[in-house]
Length: 467
Ligand SMILES: Nc1nc2c(ncn2[C@@H]2O[C@H](COP(=O)(O)OP(=O)(O)OP(=O)(O)O)[C@@H](O)[C@H]2O)c(=O)[nH]1
Ligand SMILES: [Mg+2]
Image (cartoon, rainbow, N blue to C red):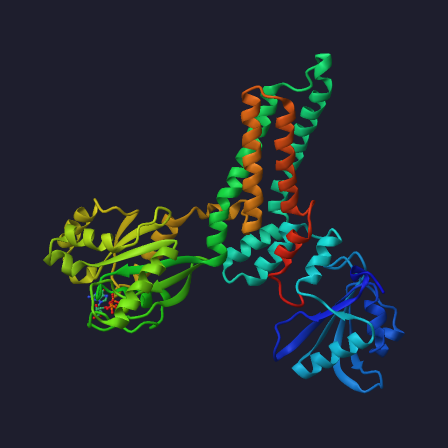
């Protein structure tokens, strides 16, 4: 029995279902030998890497199964690093299943989820950040997410970590040497030099850790909850933002009973907009449940847009009404709040100026006058959210985007901080070395220079078949 990594694997790499074509990937040492069973062209021609061969795909009794293209990649020159053949066949479920069955009969086995990428990692074609970026790229739904994933795949983020690993190794080597030479009174490295170097690593890690929040928002989308009293225009704003009549709008207070979620893309970023039931005291059982759900949404959001109605603010005491609305919004320190004074089309400019003055004292990150009747409000609101929620200049820099990378980077940061404190207090070099070693291992785990089953499981469990 061959070791698992010596076996030749196969799977459909295109989405399952019917399509114009489907691609079946075969990877492992016997890829070509196995495929030769089914093609006279492959059998009789000299096969070269990165060439495409048009051929009938024949079953073992020489019955034609399909007309296909075989693309051959020799060992060392493929995604997985192994000998690989990609079979482009017609995308019928029946045809693809028949081809897979025949490949398996001839000695290949079905690949596990993510096994092609796993093999690429094992063969040194990718590090773990790059492996994770493959998934990020497959799942990317907007320009920004694809860009982040591509930069990771290019090795841009890995380089940043590799530099830190190299600097940290230098520090560690010098500290360990100084432990050896201390008795002879030889100073191997000046503490100030060491401290400076460690601070630089710390700074780099801090930036990477901060980039995670932007990375997460880019990947998953920015969650925006529209919260406010009934009839202020939340559903109308949802419809404006997602450019679609997603929610029912009526002049009746309490129209929206349930949470309505829809997404929109603005400047390459994804926004998940959540419309909720208007907050008010009510005896209506269904509405009570809806209001409860609204509050739960507010607790999960990255940004809460608190919507108030400009026309009722001018006729009532604006400041109090804003305060009352804000009181109903669940308290959360980490959430950004934007006050939207809506229906600005229905008030005069002088009234609008007055309202902005009144709203200036509200406990929110920013205030905006909006109207669902004015197209421009869409861009203004989304721009404000984008500005409030994070720094997307990170797009041009190294961005980390998985919780795994974040946890290890944070641990590494903590260990270096500890070692710096030990250095400042002139404590034993042994402790400094111990913390630095911990920190180093964490960074190595991020790239997969050090790994175990748990890490592998975590990285590859998210993958689907054929990737
Ligand atoms: N003039 C004006 N009217 C608006 C605007 N936005 C909404 N409205 C009107 O206000 C009323 C209520 O709008 P909705 O969007 O249903 O309000 P809502 O906040 O979702 O209300 P509930 O679902 O009941 O909580 C409707 O008659 C809308 O046409 C606006 O910007 N300007
Ligand atoms: Mg509504």
